[in-house]
Image 1 (cartoon, one colour):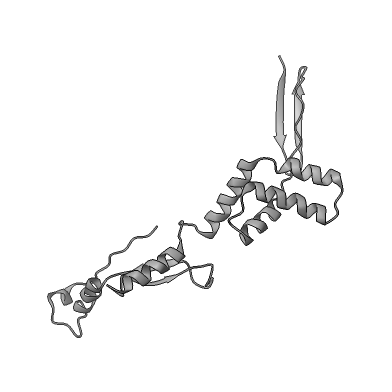
Image 2 (spheres, helix red, strand yellow; image 1 turned 90 degrees about the horizontal axis):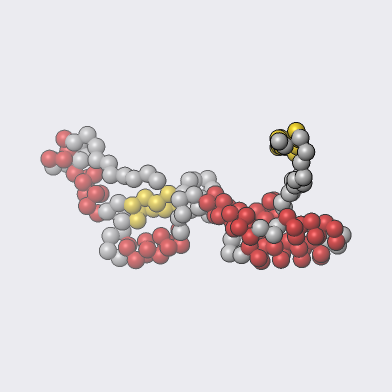
Length: 169
């Protein structure tokens, strides 16, 4: 009975055989991950087939030899892998799936009725010194906070220690 043992090392693969084997060893595929990440960071709307075309055309423009162009084409044939890379980059840029343009548009709409509903927000991509956040409240909650102020209020809520209503994702 034949057995095959495979050891995956950082830059190579070792295959140990015991008995007679007919299966070929597959080479380690070096995918151009950095170039793909750069393209997707610059233009997140690229499709996997556009990424493939861009990589091959850029190598042709650089004057690379045909063997390296064909090797790159073989390494990036898997559109599902490219789609997964695109999703990873999207998840790292928007870890909670935020669409800050939509929130900003909603804030303009909500400010007509309650200016505290979306009180403040920050997109980490535009202001990297602060984390991404959306702080929302309401006039009613702000009034609760004012009523809890011991120094200025004689409301029943001024005896309460704190009022907090929050959600962390």
